[in-house]
Each structure stands twice: as structure tokens, then as C-alpha cells.
Image (cartoon, rainbow, N blue to C red; front, side, top):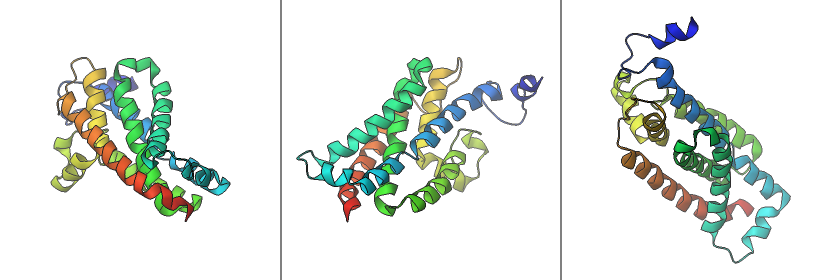
Length: 200
């Protein structure tokens, strides 16, 4: 009964899909976001334990240290999504993006208390300012502009295109993956510059 009601929601243009199908990819993206966004807390623990100091004296490039963290988070997200292996690349890329974003925050705030507060503040706006719950067409212009700049929008779009029969994303998969890759590269560069500052 519940499923029938929500599969026939009127007034939400989902392109012929049931609303449950439309939301499924958004909920998967939410899981990725919520798991990855708090990955930076591990960096603060490592800083407090002196592990970051030891890593920074090695000859490894700073970008390799940050990329290693991002890949570790991506692999953790990949395990969660193993049953949907066809969309694992999107999940992997999304986990890397938000884990690296989390690392940037951790490098700036440097304390667990501040990090947890900022992480809580950022997750819900990132989620609701995307196409995870409702289409971009229903958003006011200012929110649509924010959603278009939100990498979660492109993650949801790629997942929706790959996971749902008859579900077509707003953007071609190449656009979604291109935007996500570009965001990841920018965040990796920023995190690599900020990472040595953890020990100051």
C-alpha cells in the first residue's frame, strides 16, 4: 500500500519513473555522502597520535598521501556498493570526492569538535541542494544554480542513468563523470596544499 501510494506521486515530473525509483539513487548517494563526509575525522585522530608527523617526513609527495586517503575511502564505499557493481565507478568517484572534501575541512579546523560540527552543518545542505529528492525543474532559480554546482547532483544523475531501467539522467554520463573527476582533481590539489598544515 505504502509503495503504491509513493509510486504514483503526482505533480513531481520524474520523466515517467515512479517516485520510489527516482528516489532510490538519491538515497544511495546520501549513503555515500554521509559515510565519506566524516572520513576526515580519521586524519585528526592521526594528527593527535603523531602519525601525520611521521608521514610528512617520508619522501612521498603530499599529493600521494592525500590520494591514498581518498582511494581508501573510495574502496570502502565500493565495498558497500558491490551489489550494484555496474555503478561502482560512480560510487567510487563520489566517495573519493566527498572524502577529499572532508580532508580539506579537517586540515582547516584541526580539532574533532569543530570538524563534527561543520560536518553536521554541511551534509544536509549538500544533500537537499541536489537532485537526490526532487528534480531540478522544481527548484527555484537560486537553488537550481547551487544544485548545478553541487557534485552530488552529478553523482545522483550518473547513478540514476545507470541503475534505473528507462531512467535517463539530465546529463550524458561523460558530463557527469567529467564534472566529478574535475571536482576531485581540484579537491586533491587543495587538500595536498593544506595537508602539511595539520602539524602546525
